[in-house]
Image 1: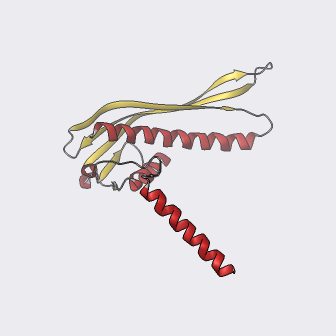
Image 2: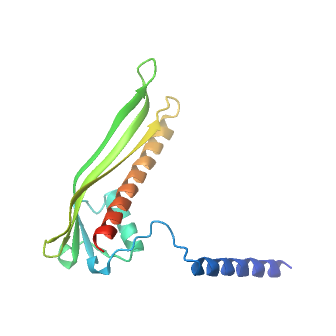
Image 3: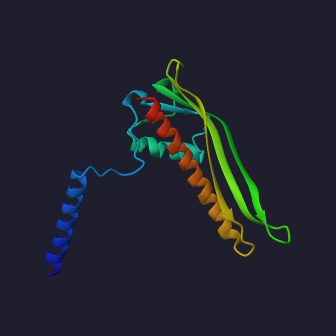
Length: 168
């Protein structure tokens, strides 16, 4: 009986996946970039920067190769004017900050291998707010780190969306 129930589960999963495939279901945020931009070089962001690692993941899912040698690239994604800041949104009656807003912004442009601009210089930015607890300091530091990661991913998605629109 146990073997039959396992077989039933696997068959159900296979039927479900086939049904999703047939109805046109696609994963969200999977980029569809033109193959002509691959391989791409990321300028202005160090290889050990979290932004670089996250660009690599997004480009990998879009079948765009990210190279570390500019001479091997068909295109160059140039990142400039990065800014990150945190500001107080509200304070309590004692003057202690109870809510912060973090912001991350940058400028980008896309060039071909010979330096011709494919996408003109543009700015993108994103911000998030969070509450500051006096009692859970470590948790709030971790929350801020996760929010900063979300901001980076949001910026990357905005850049990729603009690339999709403007490279049609």
